[in-house]
Image (tube, rainbow, N blue to C red; front, side, top):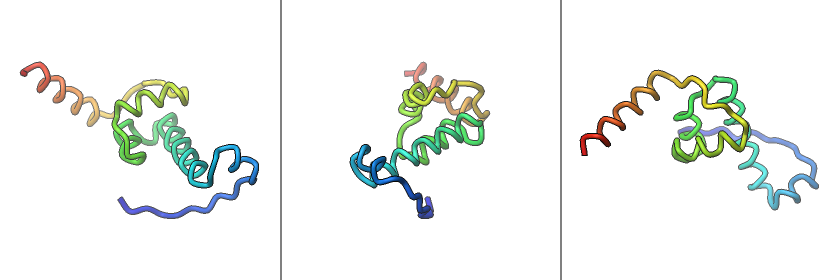
Length: 90
């Protein structure tokens, strides 16, 4: 995935309270991804890919950010169905 650097100016007090500039950047990225998820602009799988985590981790974080597990994309539903079929055939 190609990335782009975005500069965000934060008060020093805020950065210090988070421990480091890297921690602040990570938290900002996570919050942005979950806001896009809340707005329905991306799906759970895309959120997971953007953050480098699993969809199951996304589900856990959705509770943290108060994002409802509303409608998902057809692609995600199909992937879940395939996974369920494989699991049930074992």
